[in-house]
Length: 88
Image 1 (cartoon, rainbow, N blue to C red):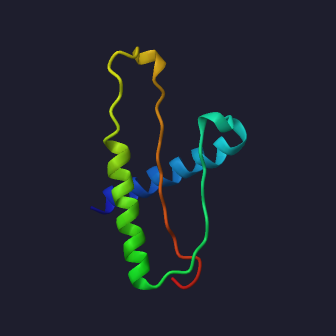
Image 2 (cartoon, helix red, strand yellow):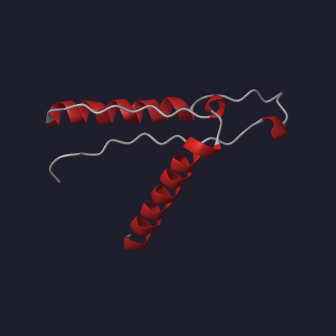
């Protein structure tokens, strides 16, 4: 499991790097970056995690129109994160 965790950590770092680069390299019409900072209690943080997980499931369930040609589709990465800015 250590190798898996290390691989997953590297994957997330690469996706965050691509996201950072997209700020300058990808037009606003093709990307969306939203963020804010908020103070939360432990219970509020748990609720936020549930909302993020639910949102990811909803994004995963978006259906593609099968009539679209494969070359008309683009690959998107969705990365919803929450990290503490204080404490550990």
